[in-house]
Amino acid sequence: MPSPVGADQILRVPLLPILAFQGLSVRRNAQFLPEPIGPREGREGRGPRLRLLIAGDSSAAGVGAGTQRQALSGQLVSRLAKHYTVEWRLEATTGHTTQDAIHRLQALPAQFDVVVTALGVNDVTRAVHRQRFETQQRQLLNLLTGPMGARKVIVTAVPQMARFPALPQPLAWVLGQQAARLDRGLQTAAAGFPQAKHLALNLPDDPALAAPDGYHPSPKTYALWAEELARLIRQA
Image (cartoon, rainbow, N blue to C red; front, side, top):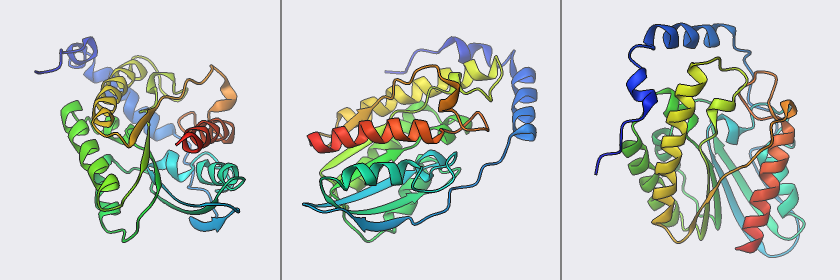
């Protein structure tokens, strides 16, 4: 059954000149933040062995933090290392879509106990349709829980792009509506896998949660994200 057409989809055509201008302006004025320095794999902690993979886009890669220790990977591993011997790996790149992640992980000859994914923003900006996104997320989950052997997959919700400080209105509203639509598709895909858990981050309105570019998370956000992930992983 086709999804109902949203108001943003109806208004996108008359708003196109404004959206195009705002999109170009955001790109022109955007502050480029590099991926943080630091290791992207390692072994840390004491206790039962836990093989961890973090995969996704720039947020998974830690953009907005100065080092990987301040980013999602470092913050999560440091919490898990108090309870496990964590063998971890980060496979994430700025600009990656769900399809990019599938191609990348298909070439990875390794197995993991737990996988954390963070994808969707680039699918939104590239106007990927919800049905296609949902299908690709199912393909990714099949890969992670099948050949890669993951017993637990935590899929992070598509961010609420309407709240990104760098985005002006009405661009923020349009992208926010598309992000919410894709996240509903992500929830539907995850519901079909008993190993999968959808994680929605309910963050407060705090300017300190955004990186200087107004688009990526800050180390404070990565800490909150890692805390919630660590809680879910320990429960599993």
